[in-house]
Length: 493
Image (cartoon, rainbow, N blue to C red; front, side, top):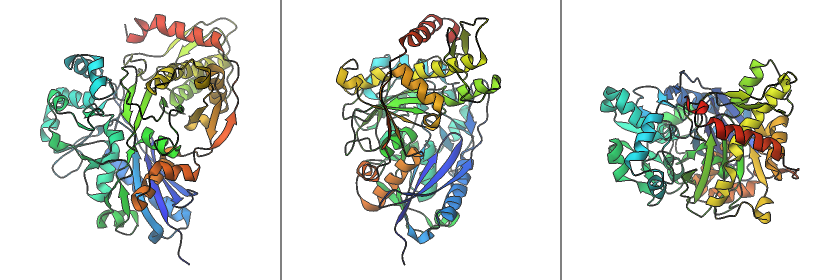
């Protein structure tokens, strides 16, 4: 009996690759193959060899195919969602000339400041690209590379984002999508194309860049014979353009024009993000005004320090990650990698408010509070970008969807409930980036809108938690420390 069609959604993140095999009709997860990545660097540097992403993708697909029990002939589509902003530099042979500069590499902060001023300031940037350059943005990383490794940029034959690099390995087609492209700093969300003035400003030849597909679910090609052989799949499997990880998570939740609009999401992972899908083009310097994978918009704020930073504090204290208590008088801002929102690339962690009675559990709880307050501060700006009034009772009653690894942690959920005062929905899908990529793959194979596919799959549904009284005392204590420390201690002064 023939097997029902299967699609593969690839989540190529900072730390690992996951290949999710899903039933194309129901979205039921059949298997998830995994393979790790290595991140190198210190003192602000964060780099990875793109070749290991390709090797990890091969290993993850092989593991998932074996676990799923599905024949390779049942696979009809594949799509890649990748970590945003990373700068991949290829030579004439389309092999990497050097390790990729990752999103959380903060060495390009000075270049970001120069770029911001050169175009006329934050509002000039948001009017064109939707976002203001920070160290994470790819344009700043390219400028850093030109300043520090001119021989490398001189030999550059192609520039790709991480997901572009992998999609090209799969199909032989140099392509990206509006969602991931909108995180580069050289793509205009106002025109839906690369911005020639910005390309000239950063010294980027448009010929080095991939074409931009209409959506992340657009069918851009099929697996080449060599890619099919490397993955153990048949040639001719439909391949989608793919997108960035945050855009893919939105698709997996059913957020977009064919689904849910103007509903906020908080993602607790290595980074913390808050975003919503909307039809309103964002132009707020406090946010990243991204495009969405389905052709709409995805206003988003991202913090560098979230679950990984809090886990590091737990390790230093020799505590289990859930062996925590509210911080009491202690405030701990766990900015161990600098910070992106607020824009403090030279920041380090800051602890204040210690007393004789302060316990290790309270210190860990204070780290949770510092990380949660940092990302929740941006929630109101995201809602405003959707054209909503944050203080409206109807808007305040809109549930906050909680996703990412932290959404499976008891202390994370309790901390977000206490500090936000909002109802929460914790979706049942645990691999939403990969599920979103699977929906993009199904779209490439079928021509159906990927958000509509994800909505039918129901991957964004889950447990609902009622609101609890907001802990304004802790909120005000943390924000007060942040405001007073930012001008000096948190700027590396």
